[in-house]
Length: 347
Image 1 (tube, rainbow, N blue to C red):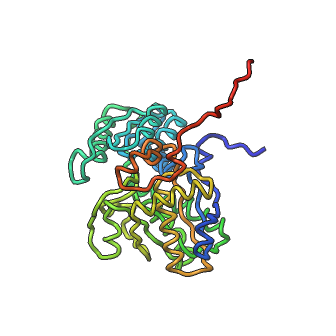
Image 2: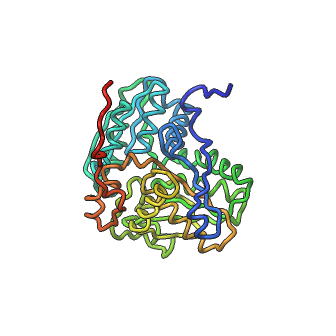
Image 3: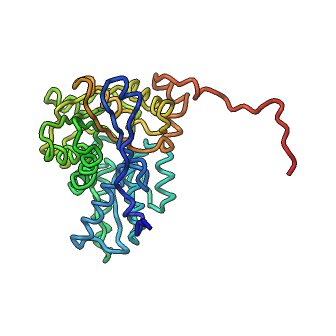
């Protein structure tokens, strides 16, 4: 029998899936790491587990303690799952602009959810800073401990990918990997996987896929933290160099507009059978860009981050897409129908 002792042991060891259309279009082998298959349904489960276990090992957190963080949703979901499994509580501070589906999932998991207006990081009422103040207050009164997970600047996040995601990719490709691409939220996934792969193959090509409204494309391409526009993607896009990004530099930086990432997201569903969020579309678009930059015959890996169900009311809403000037696939416009000669059978 092969039995996992608990849900935490089910985090990681996700499969690589060959993306047929992207591979055939570029002459490369493009593989997606299926992080949506984690028990909390996102790549953020890895960081959540690592951050909590790091605090436990340092004696800052025990059963009955509280984990606080500011998150766009997926890290909070991962933290709530980990906390429940360890007999802890979670307080999640989230910008009120995030999808209702993620908010509902956090409440379903028992997290105390605090919604705040979306304001820039420099504002003292930014959701990340609010979370830090709440954690500091709770820590004074909780004998079991209360921590600020601080996913953006807690390098246990990056270390999780150095220790798990990167080595998994290396082993799953038998070391035959030529490039890795990822968008950035905290920077933990991209910087961590890059460190793991570069330690094994120094000439592996690492690429950032960045979205409108984020500043890292301009920073790595032109040396200036400059953001323009906005994106419908959630949970990715960064305006500063977080601690998880400290010392990291990609070999390539790609700017991926929403028109491109949303189209790739719908192609993943229609042609590959995978219903995923728009960040996966950003990553696949970036992988295609890197494949074309490197030329045919290379193996490139990216991250398939989380499920489409967390964005149903927006990404799969024709009115919302049109309001953002984005194309609506024909199948999404179809009205549900019932066969005109349908006659129910009596039970």
